[in-house]
Length: 246
Image (cartoon, rainbow, N blue to C red):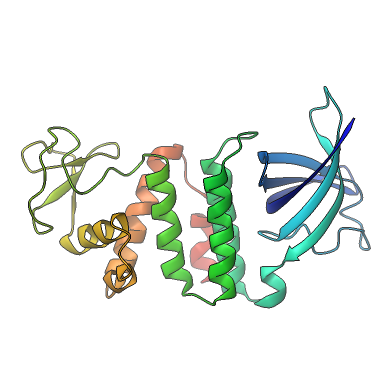
């Protein structure tokens, strides 16, 4: 049996028996893991608010070989977004961001880039950045990191280099970006404004946020939503009750 200490973000938790919880954590050293938090459902328990969604914690558990679920021994809060900015709107986005990370990454796969995304979310929340802008940024980061959204710089089929951002682009049946020549009848036409926004994101432009003015914010969100569903093969819980919370 060996002691494991690492940083982690809480992605979700489940009831287990009468007094315990299974907690899903994304750790710095081991990727996404699941641990049992004994007594976490008691009114007075030793974990307190440490197991709330997207709380940044330092954990300690003792790893026993051949055990499917390890036991969480300790969880100390490094940063709690709910403590700093309570509210229904923030609660929704915390759940949404945590669900995205949970669904996009498999268990037990160390991924420094994914952990860095969680750190960036924490930093953005501390700086009180616009939650809708942050959502679009995180969505695009995840879609590009997983190869789900092709570059708008060239056609995925014929490698045609688009000469201008005004040149029309089409989203294929999967996630490929197609030129007018390679498009097919069920292709989805991307607006020029959305193309400009994705291009600015791909180039790392400091003015990317300015591309989200007007209806682009919602249009880009709908596109990201559609691509996420295509990738996962299912809808997210977040989408289903968003309209009841915001």
